[in-house]
Image 1 (cartoon, one colour):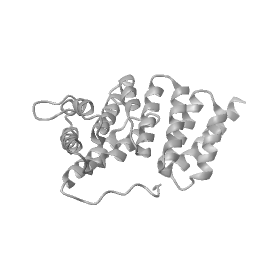
Image 2 (cartoon, rainbow, N blue to C red):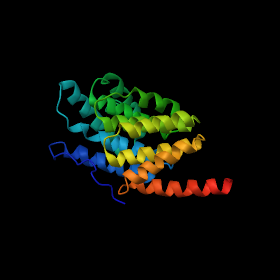
Image 3 (cartoon, rainbow, N blue to C red):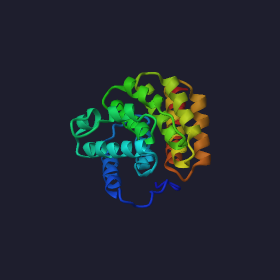
Image 4 (cartoon, rainbow, N blue to C red):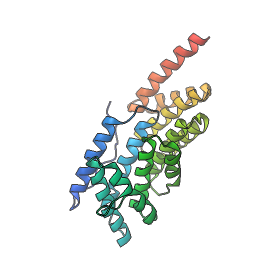
Length: 233
């Protein structure tokens, strides 16, 4: 199912090559993403923020954007260690996130680090980076909350994970993202034993977002939950 009202891409400019590399990287991430709750949210996290490369701000932001573009190139080439740690030719995401934390690109570097740690088996470190994010873009903030929820889920903190994913759903402005986050939150509430909240969330998503992927997932989840409840009774 194709979601409506997805964010459009910016106009092409002299940094089009960086955008193309970013899109290739995202495609690979989507192809090989691990199947855990909230994985889609983390993919969207990068997609929502990657085009901050195009922002023309203060010189510090321009430099952070340039360095982040080089780190993305390393990721695109499969050189994760170089992208994260850096070397004599490339400033790694760790240094970018630390040195340029006040810039948009610096904050995006932190979120990319969070995703790296999440899928490298270090959800606790990932959680720290996800929770450290702050910014004005509500959809990007929502995506960082969703990533934090995925980290908490891996840390076996299902109730906190559900509440955090629910917060992501409330924070998101894009209806496609909102439907996904709320459906994921319902799944986490079910895992935490709060079936009543899960049923309410799924019903709301089904009724309010029927034309979105999250809405279709909510219908499936409701059917599965109903079948499970019937068997248990």
